[in-house]
Every structure is written in structure tokens, then in C-alpha cells.
Image 1 (cartoon, rainbow, N blue to C red):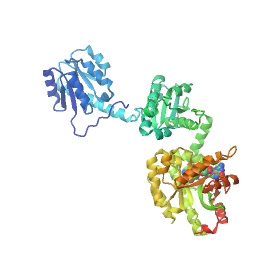
Image 2 (cartoon, rainbow, N blue to C red):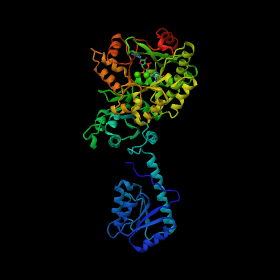
Image 3 (cartoon, rainbow, N blue to C red):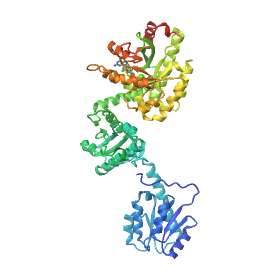
Image 4 (spheres, rainbow, N blue to C red):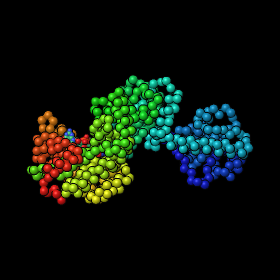
Length: 571
Ligand code: C2E
Ligand code: CA
Ligand code: CA
């Protein structure tokens, strides 16, 4: 639970003070002191006071409490306020003639004292105001420093506090840790968002408990990603064991939540705090989808990958300027009739790096997806591809549609639709000249919003292909809602079907499934004649892979295209 609730007081609204005092004369004096500045609610008994608190705690700014009440002791009221988290936003000033109770009141949560007999009006007012302001500021702080779902710190405050921790423990070895929930998306999808939230809360609670015992701090960075900064430990296995809570939720009772973690142990404190956690995340990503391993350690090979990543990011602007990115085209063949017919091509980017030679997109795409550079790169590739399509039309009289890859990160670009429209229009093309490949994982991240965007693109006339289908996780219900024209099976399906003896049952299921949703199927990564013929026999519509051709540089592809052209393709 977040500690403290941000108190919303509309501008100009007068603050309320609850005065708990049984002696009429004292009540009257304080009312007189306060009533020009505050709205005063008065309670003469403990019972009355608790009723008022219960009904109005959200709008009360201050409680003034007398210790001697006819029906209970003031300390009991203090305890009551302390114990109920809803009342955490209520500051209490105790009014007493007896110095003895002061310490006890402080430990029970009182903020300040006003002695009896009462001091002058201006002293009382000053104390009241100071306490209220102190509390309102503290409330704002505790609200903004925390994640509203789990009550853990949010990322920004976490980084700040982590740096402060360093200041106290300069020479102590410290670990940066990233914790993820295994298959959180599946959990969310299966048991619903509320239940997913509950899982996050229970994991958060457990992690907090652990760092409170072992030392350190924890935050939720986003979704199911938690960060921990704590004194170095050699035994993270028992940590994981302990942190893998058994859920106490109706929908999933007795289910154990499995976590995975990436650790950058004994961090280099001269590094930026965020860099330290980038390293831990790198280590965590290494054990993603690994059934035997749930702890990853940042090591030297990752250090090298990190160096390369740094270089590639630094070289990116020059690469765009100097047109170092090139498009290769890989043909797709329609295999519905016996003789395969060239039907389109996929645009695949390559980086001709001046020092590193040809760099494969498998290396730089994930990197650029992490920092937004992908949007610039993709836009560049789309424009280049559109220019090629236009050139083929103008010079060769050939209209061959090209699939461009739309990263899941592009899907969050509010300008995406405008950009794609402009790419088409600026090159004098029609929307059916470009196909969009959107990877399956894009759909599952923020399904509603993305489905909506894809639908708009499809309504414009773009042909939509869901890439890497089967690699991620989408439910059948989602599939039925998706506005797509083609399912592109993940390469792994083809690979597995022909591995150690042939078993194409799963492939067939996928193809039937696509048929049921009235979309065509594309198989990629098809390398042999046997694979091609089998796919053709079981009803796959389109085939792409080394069997027909590797991705080719634009000029080579032009020659390829011209040579295998059937008259039907000339529009
Ligand atoms: P993808 O979209 O699934 O592309 C298919 C990958 O499989 C390509 O790798 C292609 O060269 C490779 N491939 C094609 N046929 C075969 C085959 O028969 N056997 C084998 N073993 N591999 C085959 P590539 O070009 O390295 O691209 C890797 C990934 O990078 C792509 O996967 C795509 O996700 C991404 N990518 C490539 N170009 C772009 C781009 O312009 N924008 C974005 N956002 N992503 C891109
Ligand atoms: Ca693709
Ligand atoms: Ca693919």
C-alpha cells in the first residue's frame, strides 16, 4: 500500500481541523483561536472523535487531541490512527499539561505538543500551520516517490536513493539486481488484469520484506520489472527461492510465481547508476525463456557486447547521414499452384559499417529498439524501400509489393500512421504496394491500443502480416480480434517440423487455424525442396527462404525478379 494519500484540497477551500476536547471552556478557547483560519470540527468524546475521523479523514488537515477524555484515553485514539493506513495522512498534535506522557505520545505517532494552559493564539496557530504544511509536503513526497500499485519506490527516486546509499557505504561491495516474473504476460492474460496486479503486489511485498532483512532498497521499474540495490551476496539461489511467493489469490491460489534475476555483482561505483542496472538487465535477459536457469550474472562477454552496443549507438547518426544502411530483398513465392510464383519481397536491413564490415540486423535492431533509434532507422528503411518499389515500376514496369518490418516500438509512435501514409504518398504509390510485418509480440504488449492502430492502418489499405507467429504468446481469442491478412509462422516451426524425423502436425494445425480466421499463411526459413513441397502439400500459401533465395542487394534482386517474372506480374 502506498504510505499516505495525497490530500486533494481544491484551491481556496478552507482546511478542516478536528478538535478533540471534552472540557467546554477549553473547546471554546481553541475554537475562538482557530475559527478565522480553519473550519473547526469538535468532538467531546473519543467515540465521537473516531466517528468523525472515519467519515471525514480525507478532508481533515489536522487533529488536536486532548489526552483525558471521558470514554477513553487520548493514546488509544493515537494508536487507532497509527494502525489504520487510511489515516496515515492525519497529523496529530497532543494537548497536555503533563510532560510525562510526551514520550509515549511521540512513539505512538504524535507530531507535536501544545501545552496546557494554552499559549497565546499566535503560537497555537503557528504550530498548527507548521504541522499541516509539513505533512502536506511529506504526503506529496511519499506519493510521488512511490509506485501507486505496489507502494515500492518508483524508478527515479530509487536511483536517487541508491546513490545516497553509496554515499553511506562507499567501500562496501554492492549488487545491482533486476528481477522479473517468469511469463508474467501469460499470467496476466489468463487470470485478468486485476489478478495480474495482485500478483505484482504480492511479489513486491515479498521483495520488500527481503531487502528489509538483508539491507538494500527495491523499486518497480515498470510492468513486472523490479530493481534491487543491496549489499553484495554470494547466495542468490535462496533469495530466489524465498522470493518466489506462493500466491494467495482466489483465481490462482497455491500457484507459485517463478522469478528470474539478472545480477551485476559488486558494481563499479564510478559508473552511472542507470548503467549498472542496464548491466543487470542484460544479465537477466540472458536467462529469459531458459528453463534450467533463472539467475544470470553479468560477465565479460556481456561487457564486450556492451562495448559494441556503445559503439553502434555512437555511430548511428553518421550511418544514417552517410547511407550506410542498405536494404536487401528476399523474395516470397506463392505456392498455391504447382509452379511457385514470385508474389512479393521482404525488405531486410543491413549495416555496411566502415570499420566492422557488414553488421546483421540481429545485432543492432534489438539495441535500437531499446533506445528509440529504431524509429529513425525504420522510417529511413521504409522510405528507401518505397523508392525502390517506385523505381521498379518506373524503370522496369514491374509492380511487386514489398513487406517492410514495423518494430513493436514503432507501434507506440503517435505519428506512425502519418509517417507511413507520407512514405506511400511521397513516392506516388498505393497502400497495396507496401505490406507491413508486425511482430506478434507487439500485439500482446498493449493489445487494445495496438490492435486499434493496426486496424486503422489496415483500413487505409495496407496489407498486414503478423510476423513471428507462435514465437511469443497470443491467445486464440486475441487472434480472432486481430485485423490481419496473413500469419507469418515463426521460423522455429518450420525448423522443428523437419528436425529429427519429420512431424508436421503442428504446422498443419497452424495452417488450419489461419484458414479458420480467413488469413493466409506464410512460412519463412524454408531451406530445402522437401520442406517446400511438404508445406505446399499441407496448404501453406506463401513460402520464403534460402530455398528460393537469400536476401539480395537491391540490384541483384532486380535481376532475380526480372528473370523469374511471369507475365502475370506485370501490371
Ligand atoms: P525477420 O523479420 O523474422 O526476418 C527473417 C530473418 O530470417 C532474416 O534475418 C532473414 O535473412 C532470415 N532468413 C530468411 N530465410 C532464411 C532461411 O531460409 N534460413 C535461415 N536460417 N534464415 C533465413 P535478418 O535479415 O538477419 O533479420 C533478422 C531480424 O531483424 C528480422 O527477422 C527482423 O525482425 C529484424 N529486421 C530486419 N530488417 C529490419 C528492419 O528494417 N526494421 C525492423 N524493425 N526490423 C528488421
Ligand atoms: Ca519480418
Ligand atoms: Ca519472422
